[in-house]
Image 1 (tube, rainbow, N blue to C red):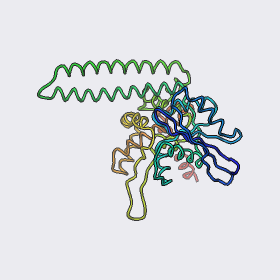
Image 2 (tube, one colour; image 1 turned 30 degrees about the horizontal axis):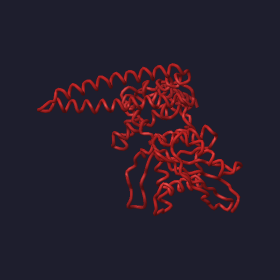
Image 3 (spheres, one colour; image 1 turned 90 degrees about the vertical axis):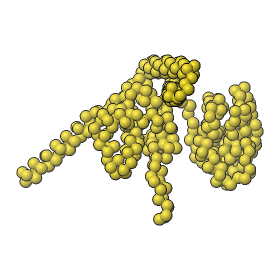
Image 4 (cartoon, rainbow, N blue to C red; image 1 turned 60 degrees about the horizontal axis):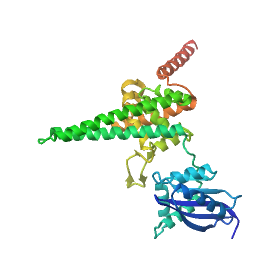
Length: 356
């Protein structure tokens, strides 16, 4: 056996258990699967899992613990290992499933999946996972709960309308739905009050939220969602990365002369962010002339109104990132000032030509 260059623990996570596989790649770039085992997915079993990793790995060789983002079942393991100085990588399930298909495995079991995740961690340059800041984690939970309640309220209102419009209306059912709507409205108000209290209690977050709110069309709640879903742009380095994270990156399908599909956004990103940007884009188009002109140009070029509004959504999200990065607020007169400078330069140039 050659010298170990990199070690990886692949974990296939389920509600009840952790199927783990430990492997390494040697100096001949050959992959070896060393040992496999199953642990209970309970906080009490995690210390023994940690000792098992330490026992079978070499301390002077880089070790990565790779797992899929499996709902909430992976969280206890990920937080525990990160707190004990392990390098943890949490990968999207579609990445792992696409990788497994490339291996052409005919057998699918939990142990085989753990082995595939281990191999993925050894072959790929995976990114280390960092747990979100507590305030952003709380903000994310509250904003998502509010969104869920609003959707539930819309469903109940639709059912209430259908019941009232029907020939045989059930008054008891109508009354129960009214009570549920009142309860949901009360809970939404409580969540919004809690959001304002949390933002107000954190000076930096309050400044960031206020800065994003300066953009025409973006209000307090949308600003909260943007910062909650991006963890205050902590892991975002540039606009391209942000648009990819939100699923606004362009997907094009073209091959030869026979395949020429429509250009669309990938939607392989944070759906909560995209949903939050819908109404702000509409508002910005109505109340901000430069944004309206931008949207109109896109619509005229493509002939599809929704493309213009999606472009505005992406533009507003990128603008929020730029303001956050530069620690500045939105200047509503920016485009007018820019046009005035251009006109001034042209006027000076014309005067020089006339004088010559």
